Image 1 (cartoon, rainbow, N blue to C red):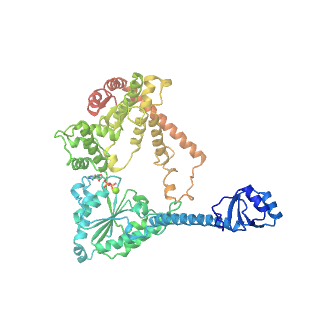
Image 2 (image 1 turned 90 degrees about the horizontal axis):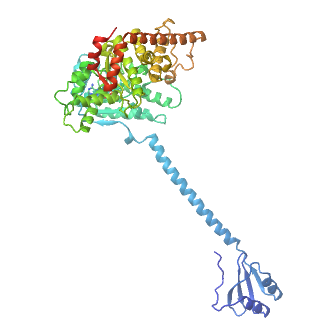
Image 3 (image 1 turned 180 degrees about the vertical axis):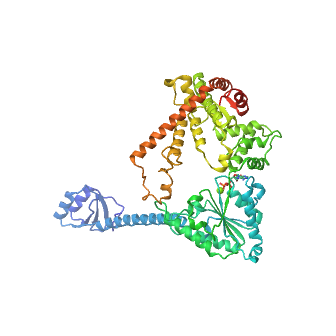
Length: 584
Ligand code: ADP
Ligand code: MG
C-alpha cells in the first residue's frame, strides 16, 4: 500500500553505514514513514536506499538533526484513508447487491401471491371430458335432473321459444363422497361442451381483490367458450354468509362472493353458460347465492340405498377381475351408510388384498379383509394373555347381545377380539339402520339403544367379574355414551328438562355471527339439572344393559367361548348361535 516515490539503487546500505554517512554529511535527506520500520535515504551523490531501522528510532532522528540533514515525515494518512474508503466502498457495494437480491426474490414471491398475471389463473379448462352418466351409479334422481341441464345447453332455443328462462346456476348438495364432482364431470362429458372447473378455495388468497379478479377471469373465459359449463367445487369456502366469521381474510371472501353474485347476474339469460356448484354445507351458504336467478336449482345427492350401493360396487368392479361367486348384493347389504367414494375405496382395497395374495380373482375373502381394514382399522399384533382376551371378549359380546335385543339379531355384523390399530380391545360392528341413514331422523328410542349398547361392555364386566374388578376397557364407549346423552338433553329435548335447546357448542365460532350476542343463557340451576339428568340417564341405561345381559347369561358365556377360540364371529355364526338362545 505504501509506495515510495524513490527508485532505488541496487547497492546495499546498512544501518551503521547510514549513521556514518549522516555524520560525514553524505546524506541529502531522509524520509520517515510513521508505523513503518524503514526509511528512504537520499544521498548527495543521488543514490537512494531503503534502510531498515528500529521502530520509532530516536538515534537516526538525533543524528539527522545534529548534522542538519533534511528530514521529511511522510504522512500516510491519505493513503490509509484511501484504503479505508476502498474497504467501505466494497462493503457498500456488497450491501447494495444483497438488497437487490432480497428485493428480487421478494418481488417474485409477492407477484406469485398477488397472482396478477392472467396465466396464473387456477381454473382448469377441459374441452374433452370422458366421464359419462354410466360412471355414476345409485343416484338416479340427481342424474335425471342433471340430464335436463344438458338439454338446456344443447337446445336452448326449445326453451326460449316457450318464453322460459334456462337456469343459470345449479347447485349440487350432499354428503362428501356421494359423487357430486363426478356428476358435474358427467354432465360435461355428455353434453360435449367445455368444462371450466375450479375449487372455490382457489379464489381466496391472502390479498384482498385477488379472488374477485379470478372470478372475473373465469367468467370472461367462459363467455369466450360459450356454450360451456363453469363448475365451482366446494363453493361453501367462498359462499358463506357474509358478515360472519372472525379474523382476517373475511373481506377477501366477501369481495369474492360479491363478485360471483355480480357475475351471475351479469351474464344474459340463455347465454349458454351454466354455473354448476357443489357443496356439503348448504346450511352455511349465503342466502343471496340461493335466490332465484342465481343458484336456483338445488339437486340433492343422497347417500346410496341398497340398490344404489350394489350398482356403484358393480361400476367399480368393471375393470377388476371379480370372481364369479361374489354376490355384490350381499356386499351392498353389509355397507349401509357407505358413500360412493367409500364403495370405490372398498373395491380398490379388495383389489390390493387380492394382489397381495397373488390370486387371479377378487373373492369374498379379499372384500371381507378390505371392509375390515376400512371400518375397523388395520390389524395389529395378537393378544396373547388369556385374561385380557377374556375381558375383551365379554366387552364385545355384551355389546352384541344388547344390540341384538334392542335392534334385532340382524343388526350385528361382526364381532372380533383381534386388536386393531387405534382401539383398546376388539370391535363389534353394528350395522346402522337403513331407514335412519336415508331419512336422517333419529328417534328417542334409537338414542337410548345406542347408549345401552355403548355401556354394555361395562355391564358385562360388572356382571361377570364383579363391581370392583371392572377395567377401563370401555373408556371410548363411555365417552361416546355421555356425548349422546348430552345431545339428548341439551339439543333434542328428549329429557324431563323439556324441549329446550341449550346447545352451546354449535357453529358460532365458525360462523361468528352470534358470537357476541348469543351468550349461553343457562342459569346455574338449570345447568346442574342438566348434569343430574345426564347422570341419571347414563345410570338407567347401564342398569338396563345389566338386566339384558343377566337374562342372557348363558348366551353371553357361550358366545365368549366361541369368540376366544375363533377370535371372530361373523354375521352368520352370530345369527345361528343367537336365534335359539336370545331372551328379549
Ligand atoms: P363428492 O360428492 O365429494 O364430490 P366425488 O364425486 O369426488 O364426491 O366422488 C369421489 C369418488 O367416489 C369418485 O371419483 C368415484 O370414484 C366415487 N363415487 C362417488 N359417488 C359415486 C357414484 N354415485 N357412482 C360411482 N362412483 C362414485
Ligand atoms: Mg367433490
